[in-house]
Every structure is written in C-alpha cells, then in structure tokens.
Length: 362
Image 1: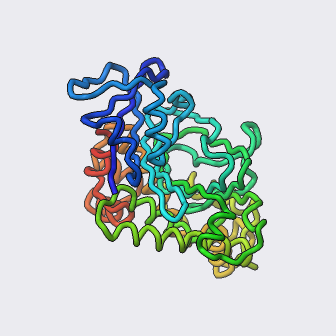
Image 2 (image 1 turned 90 degrees about the vertical axis):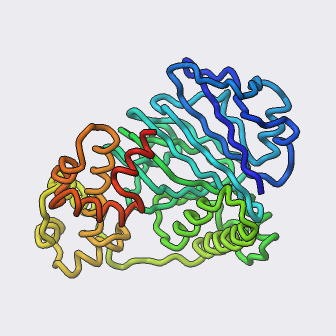
C-alpha cells in the first residue's frame, strides 16, 4: 500500500497549481495506493525547487486523484476562516475513510463536500475553540440536538450537510462514506434496506466511535498486516452501523435539553473553580445519585470527566492561541502546577503539552 503526499498551495484563496514532489503521473495512477493530500494556506510562495508543478485543470491529475481514492475540492478553494486543511484517505471493504484536520481563525459555515450518492458518517476527535462544531441540514438551521463529546453523525445519500462552528481554532475528525446496499451485499449483513435512510445527529456509540478512530489511524500504514486490520475494522463498523439502526439503547434516565444546557453553562462559567455535585443536582432538581446517572446517559461522561475534559480543552486553546508558559496555562485551567497539568494532559492526549503545542504550530 503506497502513500503519496500532495502539497497544495494557494494565494488569495484560489489554487493555481499542485506541487507533486518527486512523483510521476504514472505513479499517481497506480491502483492500490492510499492518497494523502495536504491543503495549506500560504501567505508567501512556498519554495518548490524539487517539485513538479501540475496545473489544477490537467486531466491526468484529476484522473490520478480519483483513481487513488482522493477527491477534488471545488477548485481547491478553502472555506472562509479555514486557514489550513489536512486530509488523508484510505479505503477498505468498499468503505472510504478520510481523516481530516481544519485549522481555523473564527466562525466557519460551509457545505460539506462529499459523494452525494453515498451514506456519510462522521466522528469528531478533537475540537479547540470557544464553540463546538455542529452538522446542519441547512446553513441557517441550528442542530437541535445538544452537544455531547465523542458524538457521531449519520447522513443518508443525497442529503446536504453543512458544517458550522461559532468560533473554532482547530477541528479534527474522520468521515466514512459507502454505498449502503453494496456494503450489505459484500459483507452479508442482513438488515432492512432503509436502516440507514434517516439522518442521526450527535448520537453516542463509544464502540463505533472507537472503531472509526482506529480505522482512520490505519491510513497510510504500509505494514502488510494493515490490509487485514483495516478490513476487520471496516466490517465491524458496517455491522455496528446496521445494528445501530435496528437496536438502539434507550436511557430511561437522561437530562432534558434545558437541564443539560444549564449544567454545561454552569460548568463553563465556573471553570477552573471546583464545582460540587450537589450544586449541579440542585440546578436540575434531582438527587445527586440520579443526577450522576442522568448526566452520564446524556453526555457519555460523568460530571467530573466532563469538567476535566473541558479544562484540557481550554488548555489546548491557550497553548494554541497565546504565548503563555506551562505554569500560566496550568494556573488558568485549575491544575496545581505545571507537572500535574502535564501528567493529565499526556494521559488524555497521548502527548506532553510542549510536544502538542510544537506539533500544532509547526
């Protein structure tokens, strides 16, 4: 399995050429590789001494992209306030997975570019900013479902989807696209044909979210076992999706949308100070034990887990958008010291604050 990297530079938001380093058109057209494309906004022309310039409208380039599992963005024009988009794509069992990351500078609102004839599923992995991203069916129609971490979206074929975030710095996630009928036949999944014909926004399924994350992490893996690994993951994802349509867990103890909104506002406004469970329970008019169950059923996290995740998310924002040192970030987010902050941050992200900041800002 081959991975080929394309660096795409643009000036004044309009792409003029694709720089393909040390790669021939014939190599791009070879079947079986996974395309890895990086779109980058540059304020100055990028040096490309060893690069080969291929004009955007060159039919050979378009065929190469399509043959490698990639897709052409509309003239490679990035949406307003999206400074950089990185995207890597792979395919297993007829399921195409795209891992993407958006570096943003404020409010975003744009139609999601996807093959309209395919079912679309997305999972958000990382969100940094003052708001959370939401999928909309229309640009002016807010998502009615309350935000939950590790939530998923399903959009059936032919449904238009818009991405919106009031104030974003960084958004990372993955989408999978597939022909639902073809996947059923290929993987011998017995389920009603209309199982995935209806949209679902911000629903929770930790197993499905984890499977999509693992599959996206497998993109570009050249190890021979990666094919079997990806096939197994994609089959499990398909089975879980059709199962989700037939059998869905129903929580009898959940917070109402107003109760959840009040709780999240309370936690956000109190950050980084301590919040007592009794205060949250009183806000909702519930006992503490009932409140814990209802909060977790509504968000997928216990109240303390939500607060800790929110503090780490705030720390990410400060690391990305300020020059504060680790001690200052730790103090701003309620950690006892930089060492304590570093331990929690590494546990939740897999990287130290210094390494994470350096990687995001490079």
